[in-house]
Length: 126
Image (cartoon, rainbow, N blue to C red; front, side, top):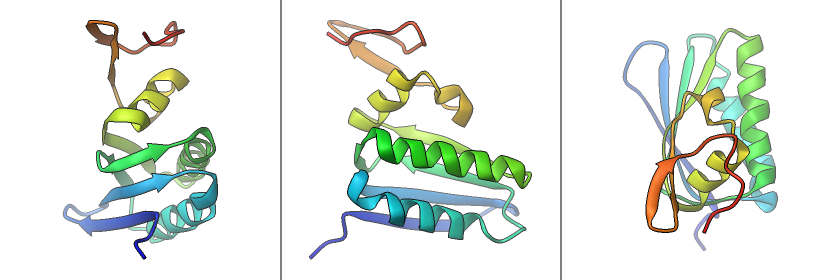
């Protein structure tokens, strides 16, 4: 059976760890999400964790809350957590939360027949 949530990471630049999340991040995987992201941030030499969510199929509010908590923990240790890519549902959750800027992430969402940058004033998607 495939895992619901998978983490692949590699270190290319000193201090920067790239992490790709694949699968589904939801209430049933939040403990794994929190544990694995904290483990990936544990080495003191990691100063920047770059999360690629492009292959993440699903992200619910509980899992997004974990991402925010991990980011907060990282900040207290002098580390950064950013999101480099997201699409579909995960991009929509980030956009609707209005907190993409916390992850240095800018997203565009589809509203009817037009695309526009998501902002805090975004209320409904067509």
